[in-house]
View 1 (cartoon, rainbow, N blue to C red):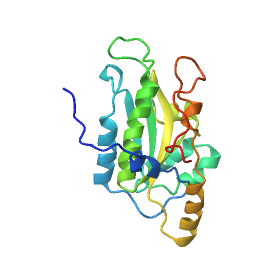
View 2: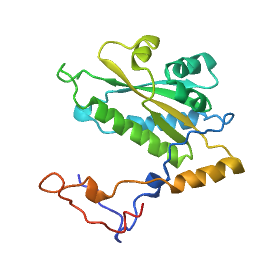
View 3: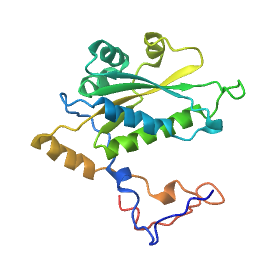
View 4: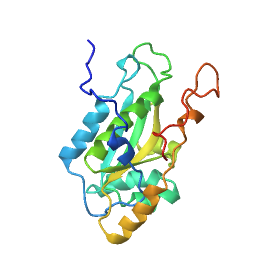
Length: 208
């Protein structure tokens, strides 16, 4: 069944939530995410697409209220991430199943599918004015041991999730950082026919 578009006029901008998303290194250290909103985040993650509908993602979640569990995730972070990530309301270790339940062979698409699931979670978070910072800066081998991951399950990233601080100093820093965000223009990574041959020319979508 084809889903018919309800948009009659040509769009001139992408979905605002996509550009609103930001990865801060500061969080409100006392404002916690409620259980209902956490449910929405992981429900969004649940509905991501995946190869053969494997849904190869798993998440180990620690809220700040449970200090022992929270400290376990902090313990696997690299030193540079420990201080700012400790301000977050929730920390999440993302895990991918590397073996296909469909064929028993290695699931080549597992990391891709996990990324799609986290993208869904992040978009839902942005809608709720919750920020997500995704980190690769953690000790993978330690994570496997600390959280007793089964064979063929790989830790992939850590998510720091929380609310932005509400004070004038942070808002001034945030405005400056937000305006400095840059993305490659489409002609540098979208090609036609052969590598390096741009599909798009520069256009008004690529303002920053």
